[in-house]
Image (cartoon, rainbow, N blue to C red):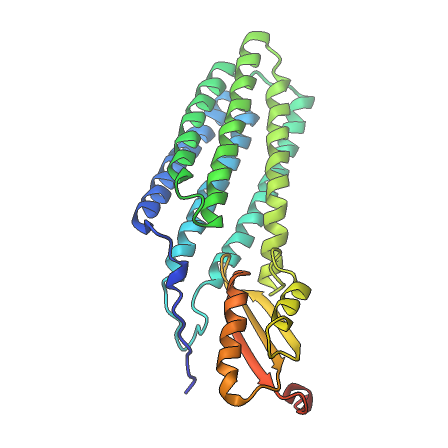
Length: 304
């Protein structure tokens, strides 16, 4: 029977978890309502700016849901079938989200270009009113995450995302006002393309990073050479090899490594603790270390 090694990761649970969960729930609810309103108004008013912004706000809903799910999944314990738990699901969800967003952006750009070639009447007043509501909803959601943004990168990302959406809604509002007073209907499609490109630019990073994590690449914020040097700097370490670094989830990283040391066996526990504490400072919370003598041949090389 496989032995499951449980680790206590309570240090990953944010303070004020209950209040943060409420912020996520309210943020998701408000943005879902707003997305539905934008889609209806965009179809009725034939506004690509509104439909484009609706796609952007839908990505907010998914992003908020993913961040909330990450906290929930972090509390689930590993079992016999999932020895690392369910944390990898947050990476897969991020990748799927990014792919869907890229496809949606391409469709929005194609439709906007079509409307530039064949301009259609746009209800500028409706666009402006819906965008104004968006400013209130996005601004309120950003405010709910403001006091938590220093506790975790995911929460900070949610805050910055909602803050940027508030600014995007300001752009849509200005588009509606200009269209209403000048009749320059092509501006709506132009704004739609600009917003789509902004979404594509921000989504591309998510797509490349999530794909990297899906195939167990080294997380972007970590540098393998730097990690090796950190391990080598620990007193008692003579060498390091067979280093593998990957992400357990969107917020938690792991490493396996072979450590060469000539220390007595009674000092190896302290050596491992020292290395693990230094790795935790680089956001590597799960470390599996195998210690070898300098005179020994690496068992992995023998077993090839």
